[in-house]
Length: 290
Picture 1 (cartoon, rainbow, N blue to C red):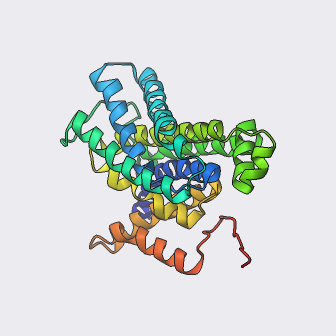
Picture 2 (cartoon, rainbow, N blue to C red):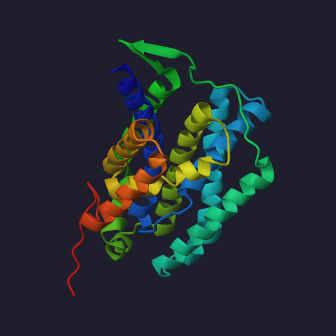
């Protein structure tokens, strides 16, 4: 029982980091219908930016976290302004292909600046253990769950009540109608990319504390695709449920089945969902008449 509880907390902690990256993916998809292949690399960038701010510059961790989020948002806004905004009005596939190229550029830039060797810094999340009954749980894993849920709840409230959040929902429903109401699509896209980068940066900060700073974080970021497909491309609650489900499946299969199945099971889930429920658990089903 103790082992099962430890696996559950560990899986949920990892899954909530996946959910943060997936939430950024959802934000951009809701605003532009673009499948953003750079989201995992924004997560990678967040881990290195917090290392840069705390370990290399020597900022206090609170200032370092704020600087990490601001720098990640600045990078995302530069990408949106210089690369994606000129493509507004072009076929969606053009933007999708550009994000694939940007993914490689971001990964190469991180490698060129910091090199391929793993890095580390003094963790500012508690590194001790928490005893819950017979189980001894890592404090950083436990704390990552409420932190991530708080950020995701704030994003959900933003979509429901904030003016720009409502504008994103309007654009997702009918772009032409949104334009006729005076909604600025470039502004909304900029806000969407800023939020996506901030969400990924927070996930990267927590990931850097838990697993360290390494280029392998980019492969962790790939889990965002099974998460959003399972939860639904346009659903923040779906990102939470999808992240929790994928994190738990990885933890359980890695321990109880082994043989590297924890690396495969997210993509098996992705295939099955696409075959039997392509809109995910919470995604909005769109029926097109032909």
